[in-house]
Every structure is written in structure tokens, then in C-alpha cells.
Length: 263
Image (tube, rainbow, N blue to C red):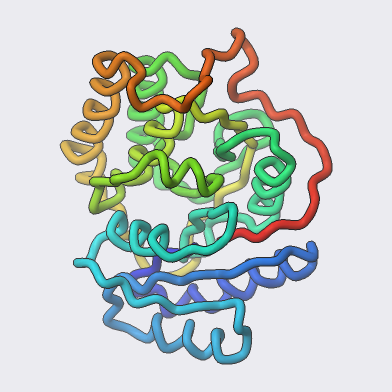
């Protein structure tokens, strides 16, 4: 699932690379592009791709503009057992998505989280000021929640359907949804694997995420989930959940998986 706002220069190549990777791996899939009120040709380009490939779908978001609203619109309609959130600017590597699907469909974890900053990960063209802000925010989240995942704010993640159902209702309207989804999944007892991934800055257009997004909206969501964590006494946790032994959470154990459908 790809939320997209004014991405006419990049959405075509992004979708084409994604479908080529999924097709080449023999995956059953549907790519849902959620048009977040674009004022350019984004929707038209996706509709043309959909006319040639029935596994591509253009969904006009029924909500007000906002990254979080667009993701929520896609999560309302996806049909597979697994859903991945992929950025429309081409920054995410489709090969990493295939690794996510291997983990989830192989039953190794409920969630697949990428890290650009672990050994094996890479970042290309990240603006230095945003990079500094990213590391400060993510290290703060790690300290607050006591987990070892160092890239919570990255949107590119994948979840099993039951995780999405258990973290609803979602309340973030903007980029703060990128922290609401994984933090709720962790706090509510879902297992996750952390996979080193690559990230490359967009080759055209402008990023929709300004530094102001790292302010009060992010803080509100982080504190909301943290208070659930410490005050709810586990009321929202998955039945039968037990804290993992030290060193296991976040470790990826690879094994070959079968086919499955991702959104």
C-alpha cells in the first residue's frame, strides 16, 4: 500500500519497480495507491497503470489530506493477510519488501520493521539536519519504551492483518502515524523482527515531511502509547503474551516461506 500526494514524477517508476519485484518473486499481491488529494497527475498515472495491471488499484482517499489519513484509508480496504506501507517517492527498496514478506509469511514474527541504521542498512542523501533530528527522536523513543528498535519513525514496515485489527482505532492524521502503528503493536504484545534496509532520497519533487512534524504531533502519540503501556495493566495485550527473553526481540531468524498475498 502506497500513500501518495503530488508524486507525478515518481509514482510510476515506484509502482513499476514494486510490481516487477513481486512478479519476479512469484508473489500474489495487490498494490493499492492511495491518492491523498493530489493536485497533479498522480491519480491519472496510477489509473493508467491499473488499466494495464489489474493488481494495481488507485484509491482516492475519502478523508481530509494528510499522510496518516491516507494510510488509514488503505488499511480500511486491503484484502491480504499481510500489508506493507511503502513510500511513493521511490526511497524504499522492493527487495527489502520481499524480505519482509518472507518473515511474516514464514511465521517468524507478526511485524517486520526495517532499520536503516543497523549493520547492513544504508542511507543515501538524507539531509543532515533531518538525520540529526531522526536519531534524537528515535533514541528518545528507545529509552522511553525500553526496546531495541532504532528506526521507529520510518514508515516502511509490514504487518500481519491481525496486528492492524488490534491496533485500531488509529488516531494519527499525519506522519505521526509512522510511530503510532509500531509502538501500539509492540505495547500490545505482537512480535517483531528488525531487518537492515536501504533508503535512498527521492530523485525528484519535495519531501512532504517538514521538521515541524517532529514536534507536538509526534510527542502526543508517543506519550499516548506510553501511558497505555504503563497504566493499562496490559488490558490491550494479545492473549497469551509473555515478555520475550532478553536478546530475542528484534532478532531475525530467516527461513524460507511459501506464497502469500500482501497489500
